[in-house]
Length: 481
Image (cartoon, rainbow, N blue to C red):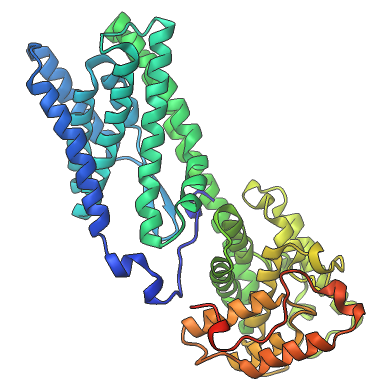
């Protein structure tokens, strides 16, 4: 989803967080360096220029600054975990100015517009600083490249070579802007840079590609006659409105499915907020186990709605206080396939449906709906299975009391290597220790799992995989939390 491109990281020890160790200082210094390089060079370039500054030129610059501020005040907001990024149509103004009037004017225009709009919107000073640095540096790089390709001469954009140079310059400006947007988000959330950059790039690239091409056309029409460039502004506005509607539709679709999943949970007071807890835990386990990018996002997104298929289960079965009959149990198992049917036509979840379809499968083939074994079960589904089982065991039910976290982990260890992936169970134990839920390792359970694994016959071999290595973990054998 565009408003949840990547989940924020939670539940990690303070020692693992770069933000807690270093704060915002590195980002502020980095932003200042970028801003000084771009704005300083622009001012120096204009100061030594002998070109006259006519009243018309000054009026055009002031008008462009005013329009850029208005465009910056109406961005499309994209939340990436706990942080929010914004896409504004102002680039459609910066690029034509860069191509027609020169990169120094575009750099200063972006500096004034970003600082003014961010301060007007009440953003913290360090965000206003970094946003301004991003805009000015990206335009500086794109402008220098355009000057280098065209030899620093005024280029007629109606010529194919100059138009190609303009498109390359716009592409470099866009790419630099996107890379610099992803950097502080990855830093603040203590996530791998690539895991933020790739989903964000895929989300905004189509919009920026369209804006860049239209911006070059605007500059070309301006050179033919300034008034003719106005013909393309309705197209730019339409592109912006269409993108806004696209984002809103994706958000509303996701919110609807979340509400549907919550409604399923609320049908049974014992499972209220079950999906939220499972999604949070699955995400944390995925991070500990090295899942990144779209795989981790898909795990989190599917975990949030993993029980949505239960909307098709009647209350007489879903809320039954005692054991289910074989017929009722078969009906209950149908919720997995029902969930797949509900989500399969929604592109947001389409690539992650196997996680939902397999999260009730077990390594020994005793799960459902297909009875998959071992490596037939994808790893993210094993992660969701452990998170789902742990939350279910630690929640009260009408027919039993909730287990304590220690009891639940002990039970998971008991069947690790047979039903659940032992690597994931260990990651769960690490996460619970980091959150303060467990005081320490459940060592006897680990030893029991090792013992049962050592005594397993050849018939159990297919149930174990390379990820399931039932060895006791004591002392320094534990991965640092």
